[in-house]
Length: 125
Image (cartoon, rainbow, N blue to C red; front, side, top):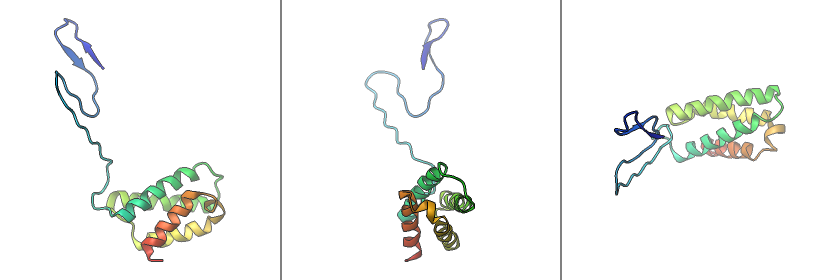
């Protein structure tokens, strides 16, 4: 928010997030990119989006040991993709098992099916 200073000598701008311009006839283009790894391939990006959605959905279900384990595997997979650009095959195997173990819950969630499809695609089957 801009305000006049005490002596009406100008403008004081507090906090700015994004882009701005001062004066007439200015054009500002602001492209904000999400933090992440630029080397992440599209299949990993798809998995990441599905993992985030499933984690959000699992936060609204009754906690069981299977859901707890799946939540932990999802968090680890998310961190791997965000920091390294991909999830290791071993993590994908553990994620597939955790999805199967929590099938009573994930079977009802579209996000569970999306993660399962992404994992299967990355594992080649």
